[in-house]
Amino acid sequence: MRLVLEGGGVRAAYSAGVCKALIDENVARHAVVGSSSGSVNAAFFASGQTDTLVKLWTEFVPGTYFISWRRQLTPWAGPGLGIDLMLDDVILENGYLDLHAATRGDPALFITATDVDGCMAKVARPNADNLIEWMRASLALPAAYNRIISVDGGHYIDGGVASPVPFDIDELGQFPGPTLVILTRHITTKKRATNWYERAFMHTIVPRRARKATLAQHQLHNATMQRLSEAMAAGSVMVSNPPPNMPISRLTKDRVAIEEGVHMGIAEGRRLAKLLASE
Image (cartoon, rainbow, N blue to C red; front, side):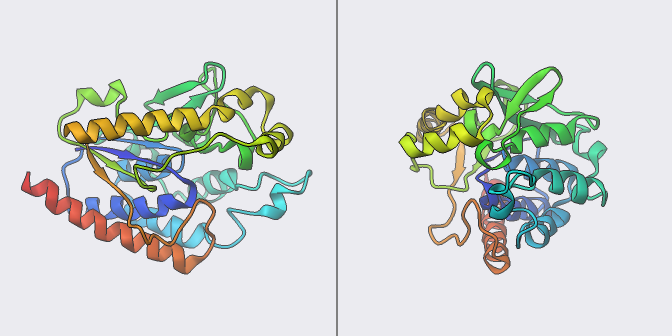
């Protein structure tokens, strides 16, 4: 199986549940690729530490520690999205993620980010030394983290800008099994162009170098979803849409809602495991 994980902020708590169920059911896995918050799930899936992943989503993300509008609107405070807090103070400091296990290649781990200079997707295959920085780049949501991350000589922001669902990257073609895409929004979801006041807001908070890619996000997203719809219709990928009553959105902070989203993901993961076993 080649697993593809969409991000979507806190909606990725749902796909964390899917990842846990697929590991628990011992589904054969050859490669995993994650974009944006899906990169966190991909790394923990690759290391096999999905129980810890669920704990991260249900215990760290709720409340004001990870998402803080007060920080976002205070010029001298840190970013509103606590990416550095999650990666450095929680994951690294507590040793939650086995960096060597995640990058040993069983399954192969890929992470996407958006190259701000080329306004295009970058697919990285991290090693233990740079995994955290590639995760930081993939998570760097322009409007809430407002930083450009430098890795291996490139300059990157959120992978979801240019590659929200990296199902058709060349790197996956070398691995066997079906391609399973886990979406956190329905495949028919379209993004609209930003209006004038959203563009004005972006000009005040998004680094100049990242604005071109950020303003093109709706076009990149919609083109990706169109290709995915065509691939699904052709039978070349399996697509799992989230349930219509999923209780979490991009910036949900409510613990009960996040836990419910995780449990929905676990139920879907179990269903998918049975489906894969029957093929």
